[in-house]
Image (cartoon, rainbow, N blue to C red):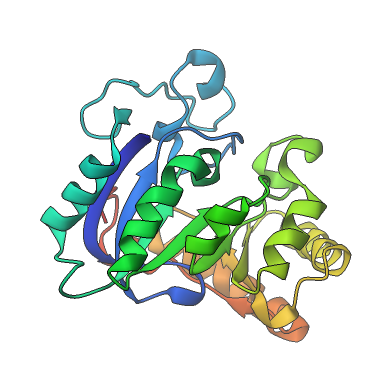
Length: 250
């Protein structure tokens, strides 16, 4: 399977599981190209892809730290176990990216092994790829983050209503929408439309201020919190940014 990073133990910094102990497996490659992506090293490996981001930075695919690693089932399980004895003390293993659901077949076997040792398996996804039955069986929770207009992706690429409905219908999905300070009013209108069209339970919706510094995140959070609460949405911050600024291994 294609992996960028395996790290931990850490905490989940975002969404409904924020603050919980976990390990991370960050998968390599993505089917979307968000202009503000903070893990562009998982996909922006050509000048053409880099030009789609604000940073316009080309990341070396062969970088030994953040680049592509072709790993087997045993490789992934072994590296996770070296970080934390998940057989003795179960935890959450978060598959992030990139877009992990591009590799559902490969991750099904990893997830099955982790679940056999009573670990929870969380999957972070943009919600554009339909879950396979066998993959869904091993997932404990989907953390779905549909991309809005400010991401820079074309609507037909970033918004798949039938996929969002399918994920919601599993009963395992929480939805997190990134809101920017410059487009917050438009963002909320788009979120409201998606929640209504896809019949997403309001209590499963959270909004998260965009930002890579704690100051920016808090400032935007103060601006949007009343709009979120008036709709019944939750608010998620990015705890890992506050605890470990600019550390991709946390």
